[in-house]
Length: 100
Image 1: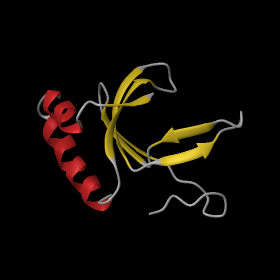
Image 2 (image 1 turned 45 degrees about the vertical axis):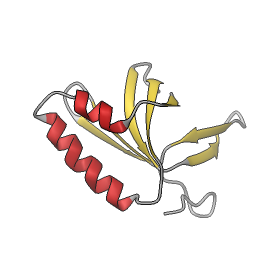
Image 3 (image 1 turned 90 degrees about the vertical axis):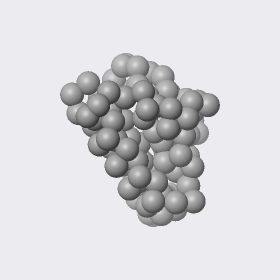
Image 4 (image 1 turned 90 degrees about the horizontal axis):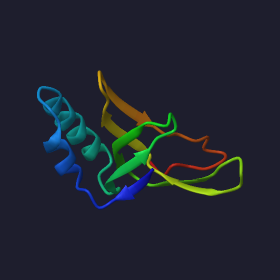
């Protein structure tokens, strides 16, 4: 997945009702909590191999097992087929603080 230039607001507007209102409410809450952090769209193939569009809040860089630097989000929000997903990426403060 990669950051894109798509606006999170455009993504939210494109969602079907009634889930659009649920995503709007969650986006508002997360945006308030993450004030001062980035809010961008991430799009592409997710871990499971499926195409995803995720609103990412905050920036996280970590080193994976292959010693590659990976850019990611601290919190992610998306509408799945049958449910809403909120991804919270946390790391051990002794290894890498997330800055919250």
